[in-house]
Image (cartoon, rainbow over all chains, first blue to last red; front, top):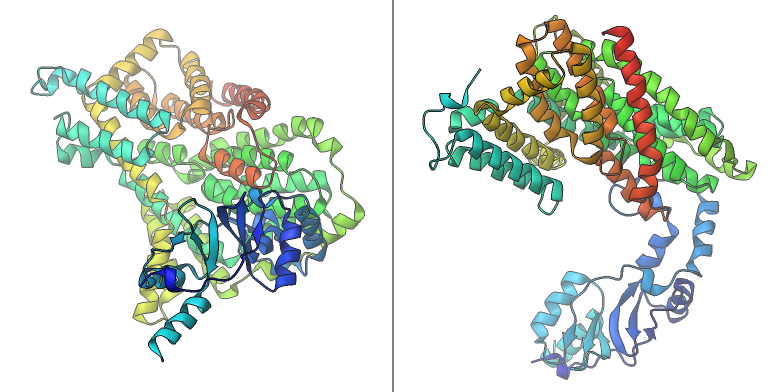
Length: 152
Length: 445
């Protein structure tokens, strides 16, 4: 059985790459989601994770390789966070290093989709033959489908 | 002396001298392109020296200076464990608070802290520890990190010059020439301190006098609690105890008849023991595996390969010939030879990796023993060390630490570009070599 039989998350909200991170954050908070698909004219461009936005609020010195491992000594650091928050309005989604993840299509077998969802821990995009985003497959949607099919 | 003719047979009908030189030039040329990882290139060059018959396996292994390898590996293990205690952040934050987060005072303090750490640790480790704290503090002060990162680069290379263990070229020179920790400290630390102080003058004139931070932002830094950066007090005590023991060992090495490699490796093993003795076998394996994983094996294997490549051309007689040519060019004049080694080392080390250069120059200077007295040869070692270590400041690719800092700067949105850096750094580096020339003249020539 392939993904063709699984109901996808309906009507995925697509962010444009030129949206600001602040807009993306507000959208995530409004919709109560942790991930948003990024599409350029409908074509899949990547997944923005709320963790990417949280990372932008940290001082540069605490990000990436060889970064500071501990920030307790800074205290609450509210002025530093406020400084970074202001920058979110001017930073575009396209400037973020979006998560590199596999894409699925309607012919992907269910077991393979389960494996990839388990490994990556985020919803995965299901693309049409033209590269356009058809929908996002979540772990919850796949599990619900499996339960309904096996009658467990 | 090993004359080319001493190698019994020609290789593939070619002279061993030509074959070894071809392998040497090819190896160094590929290293310079940076297209392939330098450790792989050096190991391939070493393998070719043996496969082509320039060296047999025993001669190749004899060419590897295990004292240097042990010293580097042992210190890397000690640093990998110590940095987890948060002590380096503590010192950097404390330094900032001592000067009340005054921007110029901060620059001086971070330079001094970097120089001192670089004298006791390798430069790359030092900048990996200092650059993130520097960025955090300049972020909080809302000032450009560029002058600070520039100074950190200079301080790391200058501080590294001061001791036997500060910079890989010194480790190699000390090991080959049997120079002690104290020899380096007494002969190079004074000039390193002088160069550091003088370097801060142009940095002040160019950037320092214009640096300004608001009282509010300075208060933010003053609110940092450096004590909170000590993440593991027990580890800190263990690490400081072992580091003190190792440094005492380096200072006393000559009088107790021990080599620095043994001292560093013993210190590393002792610190590992202190870390794991009260843990279960599985947990011990995990900690030790992770710690060994943090050793920079690329650097270690690079050294191993280079030592064999250099042993190849040394056996073939190329380095003896080069030493004779230098003596001929300088007319056997000791002062001119010392200055040629100093300035050529500096300029070359600014553009190519100073490790292969020093690895090549060591046998060359050793071959000059028939021309100069032992005291004069010792001066030539100081020329080589000063040139090779300080030369690294000349360009962004002059030392690995420079590139590490540039990586941090890029991430912080204040990239250090090759040309603008060189336009500032190269004249400053030349000035440091001029200061070193005067120092050599006053003290040894």
